[in-house]
Length: 267
Image (cartoon, rainbow, N blue to C red):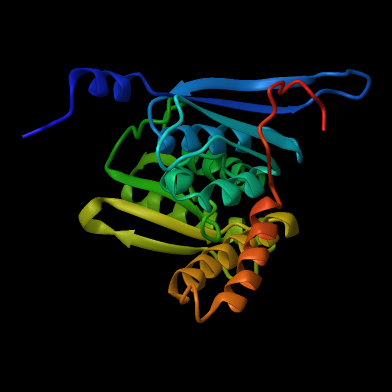
């Protein structure tokens, strides 16, 4: 039986989370160009939007501001800045936002789109597939590409539709070779046939920038430091705890800053 009063239930329902994603204005302007602003009811949805929107911006310096009204338990106001990857790692290090980061929808890498255009279109026309993408004869096999990235950066999936079985087999293997060549990765893209699901799945590792790779390393270190601090005795291990806490503070502050009352201020 619930013991919450109608007023407390209404307060929970009225809680909102405002998310603002912005990037610097072009040189010569003294304001910041807002790129997206939305309101959500949960930290997970807020983080999903923030990372998805940031990943869609072709800019290395993005700022995400998340504001709770009223202040929410377990999820404080936060302001993070950097590349989309740095923002994802910084938000993932905050438990309330972690799940939303991993389910964000981010664009496929450019070389993958080029590989799809170079491989799929010729097969499409040679195989008798109409311009609307539907199989004209024997239909039924789905083809998709999964681009994986180091945790906590979100993966991405490209759906290529349904193809006749022989065309799907050819498309999957030809596309895997093209992705490997275009991405420059030493590990080749792999093709998995899932006949019970009627699908070919191409999986490849999407290379990340040095900046984003460093952000992933910071995220891993932050999670380990928190686990180590939680395991220490506050009295017997006080000296060790101070050192770990200081390192944790530095790492957490790398991409985070105090939310400003005026987000138009250029940093």
